[in-house]
Length: 246
Image 1 (tube, rainbow, N blue to C red):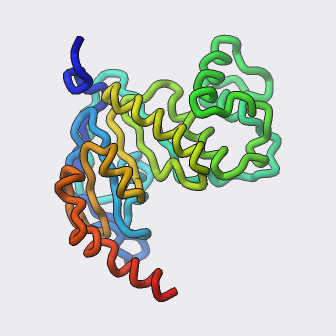
Image 2: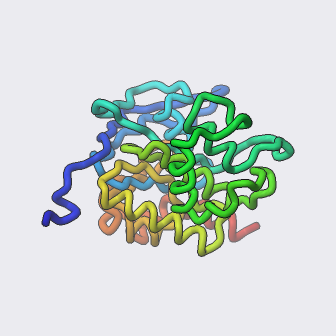
């Protein structure tokens, strides 16, 4: 039996070359260059407001940028995306099942969920321990529950590249553990993951590589090698001092 590391990568590699972003004459990103290896879990860290979310929105084609972002596509490559939050009208009569159905089919979810998609939806919700709440309205969910649903939708269809913008935001420990276990399964299956993560301990334990961004790349490499006390303080020091003074 081959070991985990001997399995071929399922996901693509990604190359960021001199990526820049300027909005309203404000520089968000400048000369950002690094590579995500195929099948790696690559975490993005850095102070709040440093451009991490803007970078992955550029990767998704949602934000104009300069430079080059090259994804080594293979036939049928599927991307899953978990945003930090979903902005929606919480008074809408949309249930969890309705929302998940819209991911799967073109027929309006309010008519019915086609039989062949019911098991797919239930299985995805079961993975995040939300299968008992399919009839609840999205607006009734807590922030952590909503994040679980967003994670579930990113698994339909099963992704080769998964982009995560703080998927554990707003979750209790139990919810965060559920998401962590799924991510570890995806890692074993060599799904390429780009994960914005503020938990540096978790990054050291789980990531194959890490890149610290604050408008520019401050450092990038293997977590155990680059997440030194000195580098972390240099990257986050001013932010820590600001929070201490508040």
